Length: 279
Image (cartoon, rainbow, N blue to C red):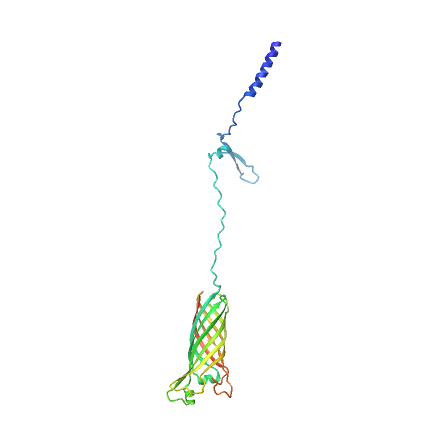
């Protein structure tokens, strides 16, 4: 019995010693399973109320351990494409502010009482430079030169020598405002012009001397409304036709022998064709 007790104590002591001196082993990384796991596919029944039958698929599914994925043994999924937002294109603004250059010319007809008997139909042209705030409204400065011949009956009335001729020059210098109507960018656009300023008139004699003490030039207030129609060639160019009502306010009175005309105002109608450029 004594021997048996000693044997048990020795066995227990050796077990404790073995546990204390044992070298701990590194924990292994679980490897990929070599045995494929079958997947099952559910096949629906052929009619309402039928029960689907589950069949084993022949396609193997292999599981991959985290360690294998980190070591590069399996292909990584592609990175998702970055979300890109298309830039909004910046369109040019055809309605923006711009300079305007305009040239026109045509017939000039005297229409007031005295002017229509003293002067014949003449020719004239205008030039304008303006600033447009958009495609509708612009302001500008314009000037021109109109020449109207004096009728032979009037020359004879003033006892000029035979063969003498005369004409009157009319030079307006005006501030104007122009307004287009209708849809902006339409191929045909009517418009209105309001212009005011000064008119410089002068009588020119050919083949006759100027008489002393007689006034042959005047500066008068002038007001010129006009209406027209523009035909757009492109967004920067149009051609137009217009009719202007030129009112030349001379200082006529019955006692003034040096008055330009017996009309007040002297009225002219220029009929013009022109070209308008937006710069």
